[in-house]
Image (cartoon, rainbow, N blue to C red; front, side, top):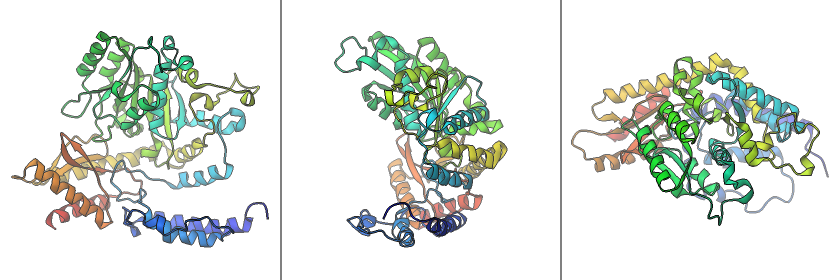
Length: 476
């Protein structure tokens, strides 16, 4: 037997899947937010060997419901407040179905002109929505981790005298130590990018932050000066708009001035916070970015786009292209010099048709509709922060510039160590309840709750439920 399953099977089971999706999105609260299974439980429930004969889709989908769903932590749940809360939306879900159906490999323009040209269009739409000037080149990647790594690769290639593309970095006495600077609160992907590129963890210099967890420009300037005195080469700096632990905003204008003066590539990580610039009254959060060399924002973090969809903007895309462009004969095309071939701007050859879902989301909600939803999330965060501030036994641990609230339980007379232990116990109790999920960080060495709002279906009742569960955990 050969060929695909029948059209009738697609239509019948496809309708079943759509019905399941619609019910799931309508009533996500029927599931515990945090999966309640134990390690190995899902694996033990599944056959250890693949089936020799075909199984009906109906049975497979039934197993999805009974065996897979119990092991899902529901990021699409409106009471998922951990990490950075994300969510998928109807236009994007439909787009993903079409992307899977077309199965485009968006590498050369020729392999699907619409995939390339829609990516050019939609990244430029996003540029306009963020209030960036003309001249930025956008490319979609899977995650901000890859976007930031590509920016570091471009920073290295912007120094052609290093000849890293041709000669590599290993065993070279003529190559100075390359240094990358970032806040002590920078995302770990910057460290991983340095690992992948051979720069090394020792050469990622963490810059001290101020009392509001923002990189200190004076400390950055001092670190660069110290490295130059040792013969090191200051290569790149990463400033963050919306750090992971606290959503703090590094002073990009001052950092950009130092980088300009020192000839250091400036990358701005706006993976989370940068998206808020589409709201007119928050556009100032990207002040100074026009002086940067690259910027990353993540529609899949806070624009209701399912993973994977990150957008990297560059002022000098030709530098990134120079770092990675490699065209074997079987990929040479007649249009090579007249079109954008996105395979030239990174390691990936085959790329998903990510632009389609971003295009459908922007059209499906409109810029005003997207801005209004982000604005509401910030309002909900400030509401929750006000409840914390008004409570005698709780305290805010950081400012609330976006939709993330950092706080802890800290009654009078309790030592910091006791507070840490009690807060951790409270978090586990709340998460075990199943209807709310929170994560944590450490600020000034102290255990701190993070309540992140970003789900398109989150309402004030869900935020109020989190507050209620926290207080119940204290009492219980």
